[in-house]
Picture 1 (cartoon, rainbow, N blue to C red):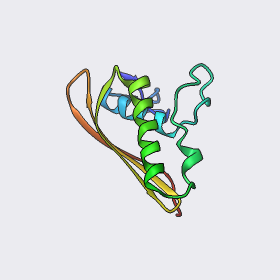
Picture 2 (cartoon, rainbow, N blue to C red):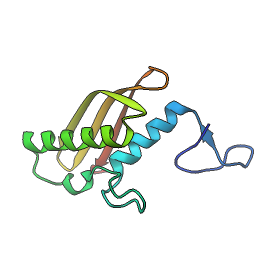
Picture 3 (cartoon, rainbow, N blue to C red):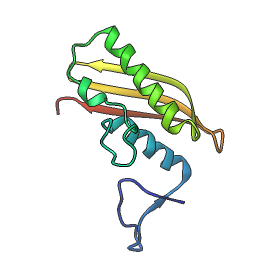
Picture 4 (cartoon, rainbow, N blue to C red):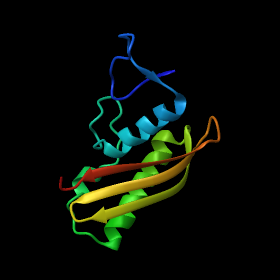
Length: 120
């Protein structure tokens, strides 16, 4: 078992844990939403997407973001997952990362979406 993210207590009053698939999903979300250099002992962990949320929308921006996210996933989490598909959707002040991957440990397909910015 792994510690669940975000950290919280379970019904027994202990640190909540989670299964492997949810743990990897948490790691992917953390990687995508973390600024480069933000983690003290892992300065290369992250994608740096926050700087680009309000950049002018263009095919070039989407391609650069896709490359950045794909490289970060392969570098930091390549031992846990195999990336199958990655889409970057940039839309007036918001950025959505949609990905499909296979867990290396179980060969299970997973999908997730992470979103930055946006107007409430």
